[in-house]
Length: 138
Image 1 (spheres, rainbow, N blue to C red):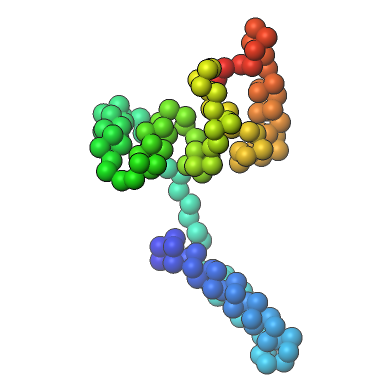
Image 2: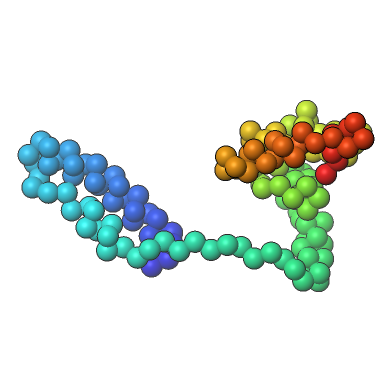
């Protein structure tokens, strides 16, 4: 069973569990068996995506992006993505007020990043650093 089927089955079992719990309370069913079904499902396996380390494959990716025939907005986003190294959602939600064309910076507010509390503190500490009286240019 692929991960998509496992995920759908888990979601359906969650919904059925709510319905069956209500049925048990109302006396329409003797028990809620959805937990047993969930226990029998195989574990959901996540995969990390490998980084592209081969320069030839990376060059091919850049050429494919240049040759993209889709909409103008998507083509612009694809061309910008390798330069900013943001998650797609962060790039999609970037605002012009976050762009500093004078200093060649794209500033993503810390509160918009998916960070743990510890990583958030570190990011705030790093971004408050000054270099020769100016914010540190990353």
